[in-house]
Image 1 (cartoon, rainbow, N blue to C red):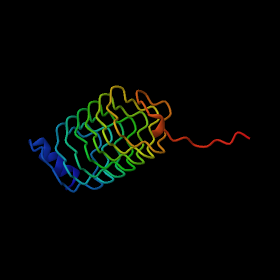
Image 2 (cartoon, rainbow, N blue to C red):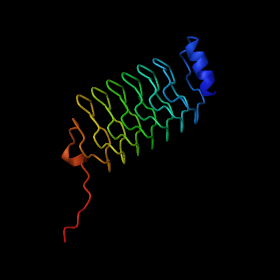
Image 3 (cartoon, helix red, strand yellow):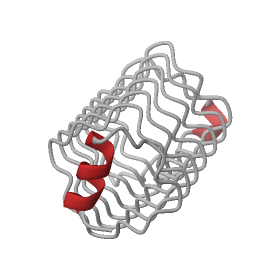
Image 4 (cartoon, rainbow, N blue to C red):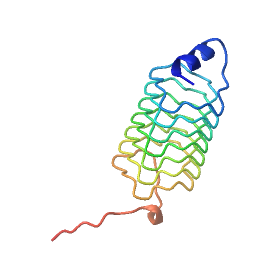
Length: 168
């Protein structure tokens, strides 16, 4: 499905695009609030600055997608795969990210306030300046994640990984 076809159908009132093949589609700045993309393939898609608030992307494939500054407030992202996605400044306030894979994702400045991240995999992700205020981060995997200036994320000592520093 092309971006033009999806936008035409969305603007005509259709909302359910579950399991759609949208690999590499360019939906920059698209207004798609409340869209259902459950299980859709959005690998390498460009969703930068798009409005996907209150949408359902549960189980979707967003590997290596561009999701910079995308509005995902109150979206259902549970079980979605954002491996190696570029998500700088993405807004995921009050979103459901339970079991979401964010392995190796660039989440610099991302907003997770009030989000549910239970069991999410954020290993090897770049979380510099990310805001987790009020988020439920129970059982998240942050192994080897970059955590400079992260806000509101309580990290148990047994979950912290430190790089060895040779002071000689």
